[in-house]
Structure formats: C-alpha cells, structure tokens
Image (cartoon, rainbow, N blue to C red; front, side):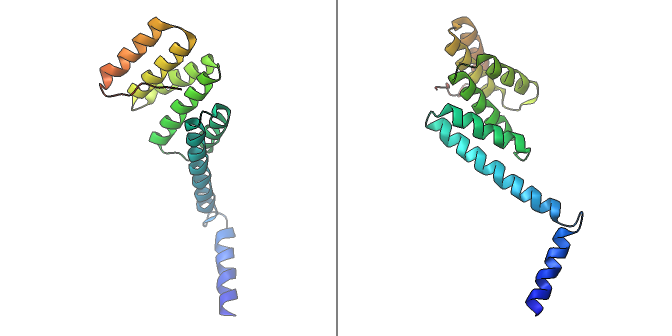
Length: 143
C-alpha cells in the first residue's frame, strides 16, 4: 500500500504544472538530441549523407545540444549538404555559423571542402588558408 501511495505521489508531482514535467521533457529532449547526433555522425562516417543530414537536423532542431555539439553538428550537416550537391544550403549554414561560432577554423575548413566540391579552387584555397591562419593543425575535410 505504501508503494502505491508513493507512486501516486510521484505521478502527482510530475504531473503538476511546473513541478518536474518540464525537467522530464528536457531529459527526453537531451536524450533525443544525443541519439540523433550519434546517429548522424555515424551516418556521415559511413558516407550515408542523406541519413546524416536528417539525423543531424533532428539533433539541431531539438534545441538541446550544447554550443560545441551544435556547431559540430551544423558543420557536419553542411558537409552532408555539400556531398549531396546542395552547395548553397551548405554555404548558407556555414555563413550563419561564422557569425557566432567559437571554432571558426573548422568552419573555414568545411567552406574549403564545399568550394572544392564546386570546383572553385581559388575560393577553396582562400578558405583553407583562413582555417590554417586560425589553427595550423586544423584537418582537411574529406567527404
């Protein structure tokens, strides 16, 4: 009887507005974001760009990624867009990130990748030089 009473109390507390329901939703949102991020990164690694784009979009759209994962997911999604030939969307995403992102070296490296995919060698070289100017050890993006 005590177990049932305690269970009902927990349900009442979690069900009461502002009393734990939102924290439960946040926990679920963070879990969903984390799983979509992991799935998106795995898809990108296996060169399944459509799935990577989809899963990274889910992770980003949840609003529960921390800033580092958000920027990483966004740059990786830009790679997926570019690998599928959607260069304008990839560059728009990267341009938006350049405004506030803490690690702009990686963003410039991805811009270099996008320009290379488009056959824009001069722009690719300039973006790569910008990345290397910020961080000499930045890695070249391959897709």
